[in-house]
Image (tube, rainbow, N blue to C red; front, side, top):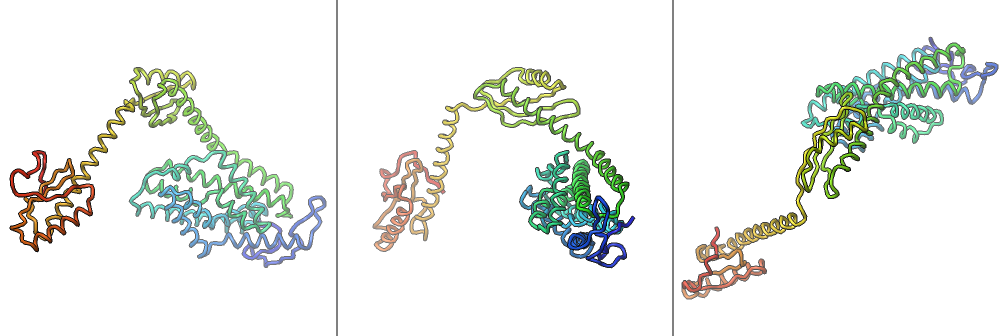
Length: 446
């Protein structure tokens, strides 16, 4: 099945011959074309074959890419997942499959498939190991986004494959970066590992379908573009017909589940739009939707949600189900929880109460700090300090004659220092007579 093209290192047993006479032929008379065109095609095939090799560099890059992708999916970080796409080396063997199909070069196809299979296995195993070690196994939006491929993903992969082949032929490395970002390869494999490690086999199947879609679309796009650029010059019209038929048949079979998924997603989007519109029509002007979940369950629509209302609406579920059922012509199950929302006056009262509580808590904290500051060094006995938290007033009961001049001066300095730290409080001296005791609401705190 080997194609008749100039020798390429690593493809078959033919030595490298950059100026091979059969690198291309004229489409009209099949005459040999020599010169720069043949040289360019030989170099491109050599480059593709080199990138499709299974070596230590490839294995290292796929391990790193799988680690980055898995961690990015667990964190739901789009930027990290994009980084994994850029590190991934899987585009090399996929392009190898595409060019191998274009030239019907069995050695290149075999080498590329072996490298691709090894990369897939390594990526999935690395992802499973990280998931197994990670304490976080939640389903993130980034994970879920790679479990429902549609025809749109197939279209992106086909266009990306065309751009990739063009970049290879024109040696445009910047274009390959964009292709790597647009056509996700490693993140779906990491999602497969997540599904297998957590028992979510629906995730594993969906992500595997996405990877298969991207891989086949890129490879087939590379095959078509390569043939249009006169790769595989010795192939007969029968070979070309076989290639076209195989590509069309494969993409046609692949399109069936993708079309079903796209139709399901479109149905969910339309159902959600109808539910939102009908629910809004049944609620009051000041009522609002707190949460809403619309999902398709076979031929039925299930609606769950929470709404905040000023007044409870009787039969809301029944009326909403009837409206949605008439619009979508489906069975509808509705479970809407109604919660009474607070009026503006109630909200203001609650805010005032919260501010009052916060102020009292702050005063209690200040009073403990002031008490600690005044009784430092035990110059002032604790029971000689009376605190009125409500009035933010401190009365220090003292007997200056009993204290002595030096102790009294030290206590004065302590009181002045504490007063400076809490200027909103009033700290004053008092006597030990009963007449100087603060009012009954004064509270002594520990």
